[in-house]
Length: 290
Ligand SMILES: [Zn+2]
Image 1: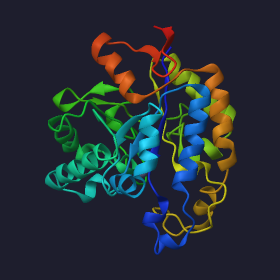
Image 2 (image 1 turned 180 degrees about the vertical axis):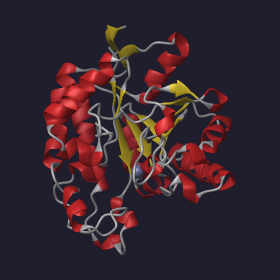
Image 3 (image 1 turned 30 degrees about the vertical axis):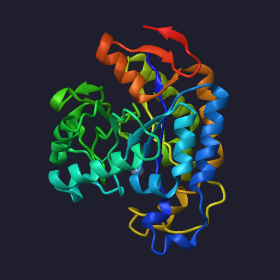
């Protein structure tokens, strides 16, 4: 049995909307909803943080660090990799790292590409990350996708350039439904029995479940506006608002059956043992081994 890798991609959706600043600020309150829940469960999670969000909310980042969670990078201004050259990406990562280190982050070793934009065309990013000392990336959507995808990568975690681990996002197992299981719109909108079934299948194959929750996924008070990357389509935008009140409840149900773990802890075990040892860093108790 493997674990569910618990993560929040810490970004402010208002940054990608025209005049977004006129909308209500949601990041601190929604992030604290996750922090409260993680504290109740006694689990350690990974927060993939956008650099400009860390600069805007240094106290919030300090709270995340103070609660014992892992900080990791999510791009300095959330630019997808195909919009950057390797040189620009290196500079972007250095700014992202500095933003996290200035708010209390230490030993940062993880990265998630904005919008899972690491594909065969931008695989050079793995080399840049290894050169900068990163231990892992969780940036590949291993299927065809209208935005980004790398179907040939395969669904299992594996070592890539420079000894870096890539942990691809977990997909559904239903033929023709190659969409991520555990995060964003799919976690909120698809029937939960289907999600639970797919999670069980993935864990049964010894693969961790790679999640990707956001502050807006639990924001039930957010004003209506058109979200980015939806081509202005109202029916897709409507999905962005559905099921937000269910996210923490569904995670709570999963927590009763499965082990949640931070990415860095999972990767450390992979590096030292080759197989995951499931250990919760905050409670300090090894729950299960395999
Ligand atoms: Zn993101």
